[in-house]
Amino acid sequence: MKIAIMQPYLFPYIGYFQLIDAVDIFVIYDDVNYIKSGWINRNFILNQSKNLRITLPLDEPSPNKLINQISIKDHSNKLLETIRHSYAKAPCFHEAFPLIQRILMHSENNLAQFLTHQLKEVIDYLGIKIDWRISSSINKDNTLHGQEKVIAICEEMGATHYINAIGGKELYDYASFEKRGIELSFIQSEPVTYTQFTDFVPNLSIIDVLMFNTPSQISKLIKNYHLI
Image (cartoon, rainbow, N blue to C red; front, top):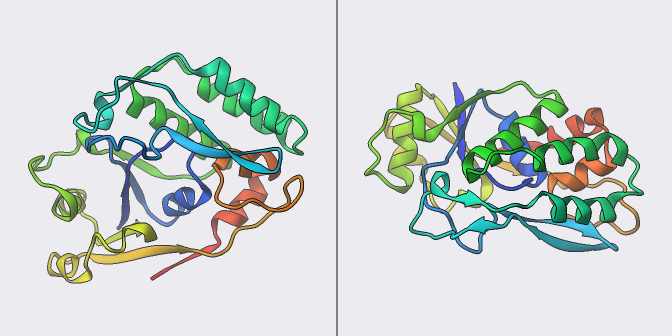
């Protein structure tokens, strides 16, 4: 059984959804520390042919708090208007914007639960079937950290294959997983391009992908990866 474990992010880039596609069970890693100035509540969209950072406002965020201990502030109107202004002329705006609006208008104030709901909404829109777990609900030794905590989750879930984003390659070693009977792989995305307004701007939020591509087109883009 293949699993991945990843913190929830605000409208993550397409590589995040490739990781979801690659596994049988996807674990939302909600009981690790919030990373201040990281990407849990930030991302980039396209605005006037350049990337524009959007931010989900938080109530007293701190790296001393777990992701599931942080609340969000009122956010919907400003973010929605920024997205509407940026993508009103995009070819899939009328299909994708109601999804974005439904997500941002969701009444949940807990950051982890809000972002989990957001991910599930996008996955449902794309027609991807996946088994979800929340790490805080998994029975494990919460005094563990880093690689050992990930391995503990894998063992509790009965995983035979753990897949991680390529950015974590320096954090995990094959031998430690192999000793526990778990195969370790990293997902390597192939270059993803599609037609935007003008010159292509890469590595933007899934919002950008949704605005320029139909669900069937996105499904093909998501498959554009391999494991190493």
